[in-house]
Image (cartoon, rainbow, N blue to C red; front, side, top):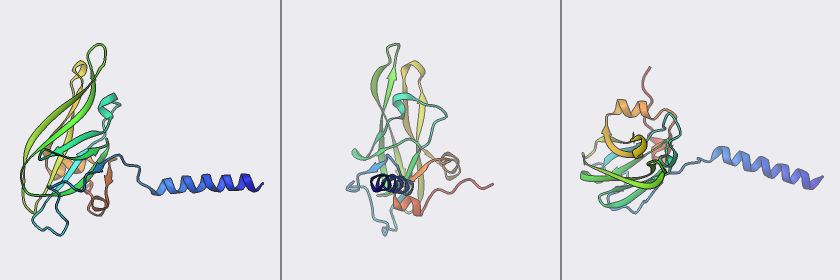
Length: 174
């Protein structure tokens, strides 16, 4: 009897602890040279957003790799967003994403990049936009968007990191 009770308590504790933990995929390299501390009043506040898709996209749903300024910044999961404070200036954001393409569904990695001008002490939003190339495969490309569009894209997304949870993107006003 004690064995069954101990087992049940263990299962209940495991399920309860899972409810309180955030099951996220995004991981940020906190040693990135362009990351600034919260106390840096001139840092550019940048929200990186990877919205959910309306349907399953196969390999394109895998984690993506994001480089900023030619240095790996993070691996990012689908349906997640994070706030990072970065050194202002011109930076190249490069996104590497998986896909399958062609009649044999060959597996491949697609890389797309774009240069952005991060402005000091301003909040900016970079979204990883999915492009469905049909038989050529799907890929993600970085795009700068405004606050209103960012607000609409975060529906159902998970805010990753303590700082992001403290300063989430607010949903659109009704």
